Image: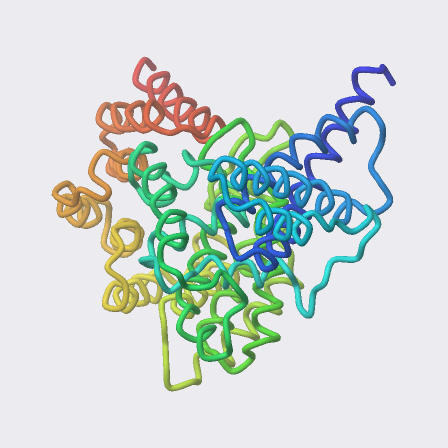
Length: 425
């Protein structure tokens, strides 16, 4: 094994470890000083230092303690600078600096009564923020998603999302509300935002919107882990159960979604023998129990749709009428253009591609999705079903130009090339 390969493996190991422990450290620092923006800046500086030092000198015995130690030193330096800049009275400044300068040794065990990452999710879903801003901030702090990835999830420009995250930090700071662990009542109030955060983190891991890899298992696995913890905390909350079931039923197909070269394989072409039957059984049992409750929410309905797909032995055996009906229920609950897009596919599978294309026409006037690559991709698929190869090629190519995911782009370009080859025959 070459030295370069070994270094790459160490760097990858360090990157995965930092992604895992960073939210836990941020939660501890933010909880201690109740200043999220300053805590995030300090932890980011600690992460940069760790990435450089750990790759060359090795990972310390207690990575969380190391990061916590360095982040607190960075925060102490920042506070000392702020105190000096503001020219506070010398006695007060000395007293505050003495208090803030206390830094535990690198092998300190961080205080935590529960999982720090889940605690950070609730902390970020701050009452001073709008749900959209709270979710965006949490995706950045907990999921480690880039601004571009978060913008893709919200179907907004990257610049808009950058401003939203910046304003969210400023709102927390100026609100005067403590950035601390919420009470039980506050957890209930913030639950919807927390569920959406976990779902978006899972989605970015299961189908990465940017980059060369289709999957980011570190994100999807972490989202599932946090959903399990949340289910343990709130076992009688139907939507918590629904979200966990949805994640399990969706993640069960992961191994079949790419070939040996990492190329995307669509659902109708997947080898279902590769699907994880244990996850399917667990998710199906969970959603079956949950749907018997009086309250049915969007995650439960989506989980039910995933269960119908997973229980079918083949694409031909899929109960598409039931899926279309479930999407109808989901549209009555959630005003999301992606739901309408998926319902159009189900309609095409039941009544033919023309019916699906007619439903898609209504989305052209929806600014949230008009021009999105998925709209072109679905149109290409439906035109291919209808035998209109030229239009299918045009929409597949348009979708390929708009997506930032390399595996999806390659898949769409391959579809277009195959149809072009068929036209020349």
